[in-house]
Every structure is written in structure tokens, then in C-alpha cells.
Amino acid sequence: MGLLDFFKKLKNDITNPINNREQGGAHDKDERPAFNQARPVSDRNDEPAPQEKVVPNPVEEQLIEQEDYVAPDTPEVPLTEDIPLEEPEDLPLTTHDNVQTIQDKEALLQQALEEEQALLEEQLALQAEQHKHRQTRARDAEADEQTTQHADGDPSYLGNLEHTALIDQLLRVPRDERDDEWVGKFLSHVATASFVCGDPQVIQGPDNFPYFQIFIPEANKPFQCYVLEHMLDDFLLENGLGVALEPKDGQVEWVLTYGDLLHYSVHRTFAIPKEHQFGKVKEGDEVIQQDEQILVGAPSTAILPTAARAVIKSFLQAQGVADPKVCIIDRSQHGKGQDLVFNIVPEQFESQAHYRAIMQALGWFIPRYYSYIGAQDHAFEGHFLPL
Image 1 (tube, rainbow, N blue to C red):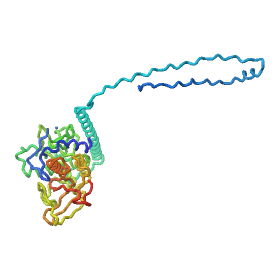
Image 2: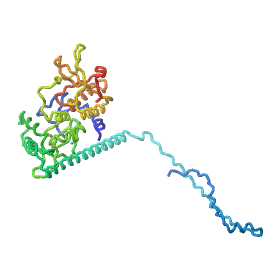
Image 3: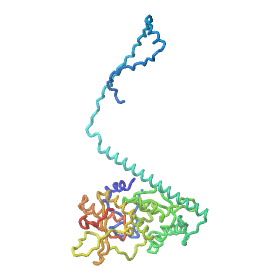
Image 4: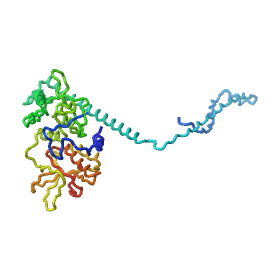
């Protein structure tokens, strides 16, 4: 399924409350979202029968020249008559009012969605196979050339099994005992640990977004490993996926949103920086005063990478925003920091509630500490850039 088609599927569900995500806000570390997974013959024109081509007989021509010789008559061969074919009668078509019922349309829509889902799974399977091929090459290179390891003990591409063992130990800690130190250790090692993927690889979370599911590998059993650090550029960011760790029996050990993965791809850490340029997250409407001094520009790729722009564009277009645009404003002189600005306003949606649901869902695609707002096109005319 393409991204645009998948996000269109979300349109009917997007007004539902978005679990585990406040607008631009962070997750409470104890909150974990639950996962459930003949043509008729026409009248023919009589055509003349093809005439036989007579080959001259030189001997006969000589005899004809003699006056006393009479050429023998050639008996006429009767032509076979064309037997006219009867044109079949046209059968009357049975007419119906309302041939395509609502149920038919729903069935066709469901079939189209299933075909798109199958296409997405096929694409992901291909990317996973490419991922597997790269890992195989890495193993071969390590065996043939005895490549050296990184300072932290990781091979050039494979994951770190020591980190995998540490994550396994951390997950055995009861949920009510997982404090800030537990979270710090988990986030410091989860990106480089080795995991196995689930079947199916992608599931839909309770927030209606797609997640690639991974699990701790079984001990003493060969497995095809998946490493978050390498999966990011391989297929996660391009396909707009989050990650769900150990989703079982309606529970999940940890959820990484697309914004979490985007932050790691830029900064190589899941830790939220204590100091950053973005403003404080606020809910509700805000009015920019006319006398405010505002710096307006385009967000850099470090703030909003190219892959993320394409994914966000597909999401907003699926919600009815024909030409999604973005810019960034800086109000640091007024103590408000920076904000990403998207050209979306309540008038573009069915209701105020729908608009707020879209704004809240938009936060799934960007890092937790980013602040963002919606504004009309003319408010920052000349500064908005297409996503």
C-alpha cells in the first residue's frame, strides 16, 4: 500500500482520540498503548469469387493460328455459392435500477484497500530481503577479511548481542519498577541491539498508525537480525513507520513513533535535549500580535529531513490538504522560541474537532519537543515552501 492510500484509510478514523500523544507533548514513561493487530456477424457484401489466372499454353497458341484448328472449349466450373449467415438475434438486456448498491461500493472499496495492503507488504518484504542481503554481505566480509569491530564492540553492520541481552534483562523488570534510570538504559541500547521481526512485519496500532514489530530473539537459535540503527534509512523513514517492541496479548513493551525515529536519525540518540530552540508546547489558539518581531524562514534538513517531508505531505493530502506547505518562525526575542508552521486552518476541515484531531496526529510525525502551529497561507506569504 502506498503512503497516500494508507493515510486516506486513516481519514475516517483520525477524529478518534489519539492515544499516547498530546499535541507536541511527550509520552508519560509509564503509559504504553495497547495493541490488538462473438461479436455478432453482420450482413456480408457478396464478393466476387476470385478469378483463376490462366497460364498461356504456347503449344495451344500455335495451333490456334492454324485456320482449320478449333480450340477445345473449356467446361465452365460452377462457382460455389456463398451461403448467407443468419445474424443472431439481439438479446434484450435486463435493466435494473440501482445496479451498484452501497454494499457493492463498500465491497469494492474493501477489495481496493486489501490490494493496497498486499502491495505494501510486498514492498516491505522486498526491502526486508534487501536488508537481509546487506547483512549477509557484512557477515561474509567479516569472515573473509576478519574486519575489525567498532570501539563499542559492534561489527560494521550487525547488531550488538550484548545490548540485546541487556534489553532482555530490562524488559523482565516489572512495569511499576521502571524508573528514569531504567528508561535511560533502555533508550541508550535499544537502537544497536539485534531483534527479530514479527509476522506480519507491520501492524496497525490503536492510534491507527503503522508500526514495524520487533521481538527479542530466542536463545541458542539462529535468527535474521534487525537493528533499528540500520533499519531507519533502509525502510522505516521512507515508509512512514513507527516501531513496536514485543507487542503481545494486547500489550507492548515500548513504542517508538515516527518522530522518535526521526530524532534518532539526526542526533543518534533517543534522549530529548534539555536545551533546544523550540518554544514551549501550548494547547489551544494563539494570536500573533502585529508588533511582534518574527524571523521567518525555511526549516533545515536537520530539523525536517527530506524523507519526513514526503511522509507528512502524504498524510496531510490524505486529510484533504491539497498543497501542504511549511515554514519556521522564530520569536526568541519575545521568549517564545521557534515553531514549525503548516498551512492548515480549521476552515479546511469538517469541524473544529476534526482540525484539532489532525493537528494532534501531526505530532506523531515529528520529535516530541518540537512545537508547531497552523496558519493561513497569506499569513506568511512568500515564506511557505511546499513539503
